[in-house]
Length: 514
Image 1 (cartoon, rainbow, N blue to C red):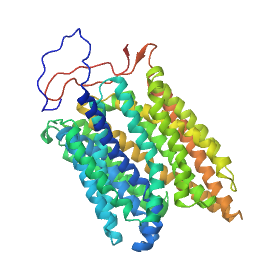
Image 2: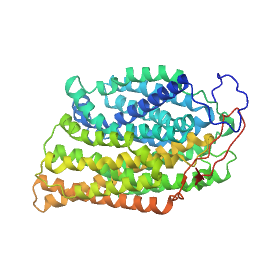
Image 3: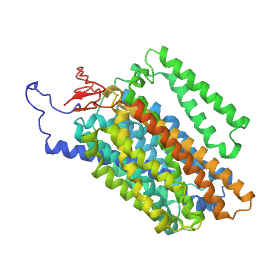
Image 4: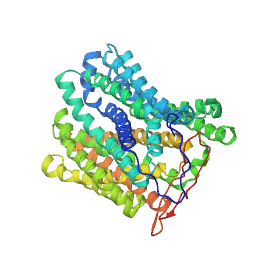
């Protein structure tokens, strides 16, 4: 509970929950808007830069190998710091962490927009990733503690998931338009007014939670082990395209990253105040949802990125036209996640909605393996965009499942863990699927195929492997995630009141009769 709210007298235990005051409901909506805006900036920044990279290379004189670090620097900082940022948010207050992260991201965006050299831009991108990790790691944790009523929470998560799913497509359109109209610098500078507005609103509407302080859980050794292990692991994966999977560079750094992460796990079993209390992984909802997410996000790269590459490199679309061509998918995702998914989850349960979404996505990637080398957008791709409804079903349900087993005291940690597995899946998907596609393309070119056929053949292989990953995600979701009994709905373990109240209430982490 926020510290500035007046004290309440004990409620009649037989009375129903009091109706939310209009001002409180409005502040909750504003808080949701602020958190969604922070997520949108993060997602946009991950995709908006991709269409501007040729212009950045020409302007700043990047080498082909160096240019990849415009993306890699952001990805490594973001993925490596999420878990640490989530735990720190639980300890010092999630509002403080969100505000600090948004401020760092906004300042780094200005630095990136003003960069006049490759080194300065890469440094700014690393700082952007750090700021994004700080804000993103606690955003979902704020939501699940702010929206405690089941229906409201489901709707809030649907908005959050839609923002993440549609933001990438919006970023591709916006990046192309800004780069063509006013220059690549503005893909970063546009974050300044958005970030300032988000900070001004967030200060007023986000709940002023009070964590127990760093002394209650400042596992410095654990923080060093997991952050260095994650950063090193993501670095080794994103550099696979340069060094290869079986190179000494990849195998050596990968082994070192695994050793650091293994040492981190051992540390968590002995630390008096662990950074990642392993109890959180005992929840089948939490552990199962995070595993499903890694598989699903790795597969989604083959849709989001490779379809865009097919449009540009095979069908000859420009950057802005490619972004516009992906908008129908974003529209379908938005319509389903905001208008349908919450109702279906309330009626059939998150697990069943997740399975339906995964089935649609498996069908989508299966049909993409049949797109022709000399195809047409309207007849060969546009009809498949409607199957992107699977994103709108799967992502909100998966997010709800991933947070359902965490108590309020661990909400920031669970949020950071959920975002971390997302980044690991993304990095792995980028490395594996892009390498497979490029290798298959080279093989077909060596056999004498024309460039369009060779590129399409490479994408076909990546789509097929992505479909296999989604099938594995379906199997995990079906077997690991619990099936609610008839007339029941999953609930989460949460703390009633706030850290000051000292009272706790535990609801069944699997099912509760309604």
